[in-house]
Image (cartoon, rainbow, N blue to C red; front, top):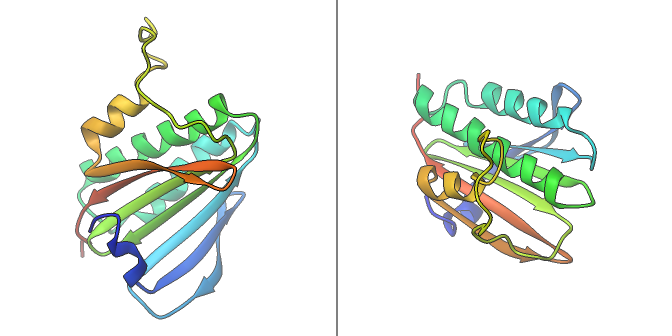
Length: 159
């Protein structure tokens, strides 16, 4: 679908409140979107975002694509919580042929490849490497006083 095609779809908008995905706006159309605000110290939000994304993708794409989406969303949310002093906002938009996940934070610095060695235990230092390897497209854009890091996966709704 690519980064420029997202404005063309009508969407249903949902917000993740606790464990529930709540409709906050809707238009007739084929896409679904949900949003979740993540507090600075809200590490449980990573699990909640992953679960909500899994539920949202139940009938989209192949199982492997859904696993990749969960992994990449986990990386972006975790990075926002670890590398910023503020909360973040996660938005996922599912269209019949693509998924886009965005994580908006309030720190202007743009991420880049880490020159520090990866952790010996494999727990950090690989987020952008995974994005580059697994996403069909990804990027970073300035957004007010912060930035948005996003990725897209191509897929196809399943019956």
